[in-house]
Image (tube, rainbow, N blue to C red):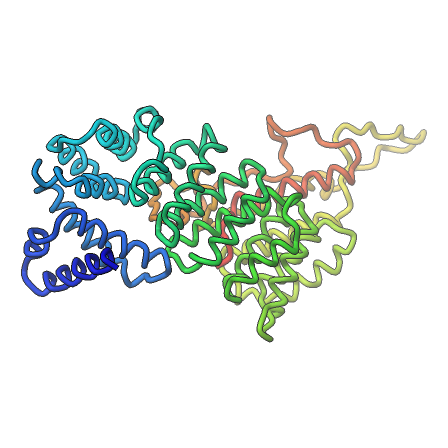
Length: 460
């Protein structure tokens, strides 16, 4: 109750200050810890889905930064203000402000060690940050500070010590339920658990995220990690468990998640998963089906594009309304139709085959034009491809712009995008199978991989 009163007073003063030419009144009246607690409240509202609070967060960060830059040694004699400085830093604060304020503070060695680690973390020195924070136990700190520290340490250790990172992220969730800290800890746990093959941890964290933070502005990052994790853990996550998790989503989000899973599974050759996800995307909920959604038809067809029912697949592809697809999905439809056509085309003779000796008195049969040019063409370049993998090199010649929580867009003029034909030999590629049918299937798989590189975008 007391904390709620302080926060309400802080926000009230902030709003009052907004009616005057300067916010100096609120900055001078409120203690740093009061401003930081107000900032945390706003961030927790944002995590719960209140996107209208985003401008207030920016304003509070600005005011808190100014107040901490003006703070003196007397202010930091109150331990709450120094803890607030550290929390501010771990909430996305200005590292210059944190470093300058720390230099004016007289605090105990443990708090100063935390400050050093936070400054190193903010300045992109992970090794130094890990070393400074290694002896600090988040569970031994006040919960507001311990939660943030557990989140930072877990993030720093995710690459080299994933098991320890998951434990720290669990501590962050325990110390700060219902907050932006928990939201971030759940998102990061999902990615780490998938990489570790920990299906139980992945399913639990995904369930908790969908229950509590599905409308967070950072939920797009959760969706990326969730789809990738489902593909990675397809042998460990049952279809029933997947359905349990997605059933907590609203129908539109559930459909999009299943469309993304269907597409990725089809390209990776996980036909059972792709068929399941496509069927769920078409099935819909609450009496609303998505059977007329051209994306569902397209991704369902991809899962069987190399199967024995290829003629049926080609017929379904031909019925898809191209005008209702995005530019990227239209290119995907073109590529799928081209692959389906190659699967049913007569296989070209293997280049190493030795022709049978001609009968006496007969000239050798001339090679057909189709056989000469069977592997000469690849898929067309695709403009405006959106990659789900930030590390993939873009084909554009200009600099890429990465907005937070937004996939990087690599837009290139058609003449600048060079696409290697899927059937062209690669120095790193495995030898072409000797059997002509196997060779055709191998080429088809490479073409599907090429689709994935060109059309990494999730359906919109």
